[in-house]
Length: 220
Image (tube, rainbow, N blue to C red; front, side):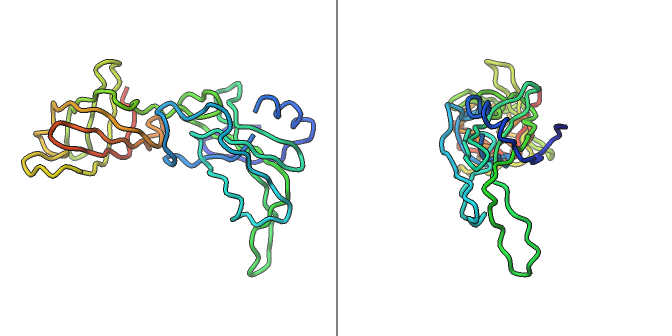
């Protein structure tokens, strides 16, 4: 099966189910959702979802989150999210029936399907690595201009470029997007999304005020 940036579904056979139960299965992810550590949450499935035949799709409750490992069970076996040999994230979800009726709602078939997701970075322990700064890491503002803000982690040498920022400080003499922010050093908060994919977000607490950066990507 070819692997691309995004997801593709295929029904898993009963034979495949046997070994995947041991290694890995569940719902996929939308980048940018969910909290947790910068490296992805991992640590084993946080929840197991059941693909009940005839169940409404909207009631399933899967998170579609590549940073949280989940499991799903259906008529063809039980599966857990895992990383494949090529470094892609393999997730699982419930197949829904195709319905052509005017007011028909999607119903589950009870079958588990596989989805392949490109983390645009490392896949580790069944989750995508976020590539964003860890909480409490010291970040220094290197530049601020019309294209965004560049910050640097001096300890690791990692840079981040963010195209949007929410100014959360009340100091009228200092702004997150102002020239006076250049050179300021603060501590990073928890991150969301993926800086490998240019969809990361994290806050930084500076002595002069707090800034929340959006659409962040690793610059090196």
